[in-house]
Image (cartoon, rainbow, N blue to C red; front, side, top):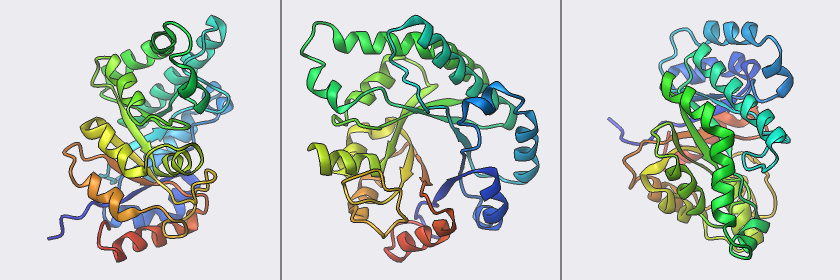
Length: 272
């Protein structure tokens, strides 16, 4: 019996129709990305939720969604903007409640600009955390009620530890850490951040979710695994040291290549 981690994937409901057999064969973890758009969340999304429940009947892998993020920041200091962002994240958690999802991906507020300026002005570090708490407090409370976890994904984060500190600041099991390998590799190649495996070590057992995508360190490529130059053996050696069993979610642009991405890591002997 193999002890290699079983890979999951991120996709829309349309993609689930195509890859359903691949998902069900190994009961792979799934991240649905059909609920990120504000127009979906503010409209009647119940038919989409019903479709998800029907398509996933019999699915025993762990289910999550990608939360809303387009045009949103969880660290806005403008109360009116914050109200909108807060509402969007609560709407996302309500989707989780409706379809039985136990995880929602949230985008980090930290940027390369903030990395160089957090200590340039008094209390800026604390202000970002305070604004994030004001934005997410209702979503976190609702997530606690339904047994869901918000996982904070690195976007431009140059410091692999800062997002972990933000998650810890909530003092809640409903807030944890996500890692996007392509984002970390971009930060490494373009902004001087540490290598991708360092992000794994920094998160430790706070890491509960990973987006697996390949790239070249220049942009957010979302290439199929093996098409870029990420050091996958180093990444998975770091993951193997964890006890948190993070969801390993293939997140690539060309969904037709999801099985090939999994096959590539299987050929390296590090996942299946």
